[in-house]
Length: 484
Length: 95
Image (tube, rainbow over all chains, first blue to last red; front, side):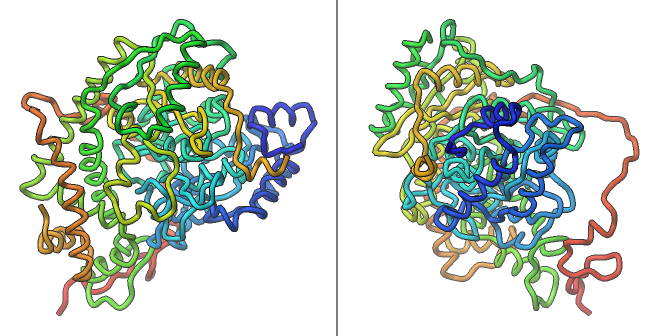
């Protein structure tokens, strides 16, 4: 039996019936890491000995052990006490956190096995994982292509069978876009529903942690353990309803809007075709599918690339070589030390965003950029409010293209930013959104994105699960397939 | 759009030291990005309230109760240069 094909729900059932041991399960994933990590490079750190130990102890009782023995990968943007956390940056090479992110400790308390820390664009800034200071991750479906980003390592690990599921973070699409490129499920929760404590900050009014999984039900299962108010993150809020595992049912009774601005001309023909086929399948499964509009969609990327870099420029001021991380040697005074440390420690894209944000916040430009962008944000929030008065949910393709080639966009930042055109609107409005695979275009996965009103995770997950079943996309990457 | 000197000025504000050729490259790239960003100038935003928080949270209060924190040793553990109970830095004021 190819254990790499199992979802976490299936593995838990088998372990519950004593048909599978946690040790064998973790062993299967560590073997796959041995076989393919040299090519895929999904991890920055593989916790091999620790994972075997945790798997061996997974039979133990006590506390909530409802995720006992599930092999889990963690994006290296999340602090893990005693385990290196680099954020894909030279700036944090060798940094060992003294505390653990709340979302990681919640999963650990439920019994997951920590397989290690996954690669990412430096400080989560990027859409291809090529901005990692430690080299790119490759797409398990085609090793010459990118896995997407910034949670590219997490997405590639799950798609390659190098993890059963993974944690990622999403500021402008960094969970959904790589999930789409790698043919898996990625969920960005409502802003504030998952604690950001221990998540290295990029853009604090956007950042949100969420699951990358092989099925919608697995996403719901992990989310059950992630949501909740955390006294250590004052922007976190209690999720108003308990997250439930979606049931097998069709889509009747749901009125779903297809966002015209995000599913037309800017989208590759091949992606559009797969998307439209999925829309027809949803209609056959009982959903009422109609055209919807987010009139200010085209202003989302411009507003986002003012606000997120502005927040980043403030958040990344902490990397000054004083309290942690890199320090440049030989500086004559403290200002020179700051400048040399930051020039040495940050990569190109991070410098670009810090400067963009600093410019947008600088004297004389603040009102024209930052102030105006916050108003555009209001217009986008209003657009979604209006759409959700008419529709239960909204859909679009997750990305305008399938995974692009390694190196193809690295010298062209604006084209790279456009990869997030469909995902950024949900971040601006703080809404929950999920990407599920709905087919292949030229052998590469195509994702469909569902967006819902704030805190509508249950409705969103149910509709995504019903669509997943109706579309019946059952392909996995060749790296998993070859273990059949 | 931004030129070489603008980039040097902004890099200075952000405490980044850039080589001359980097200043030129960033000037071109940042100009391309700003050109796209300037699209928001098309919008009439008079009377639109800026979004300060997407969930419209206002004040978040809690009781002011002392709690334990990380130890001094842990706080210093990642310091690039530590002396006694302090982070050591190069001269701030020169004689």
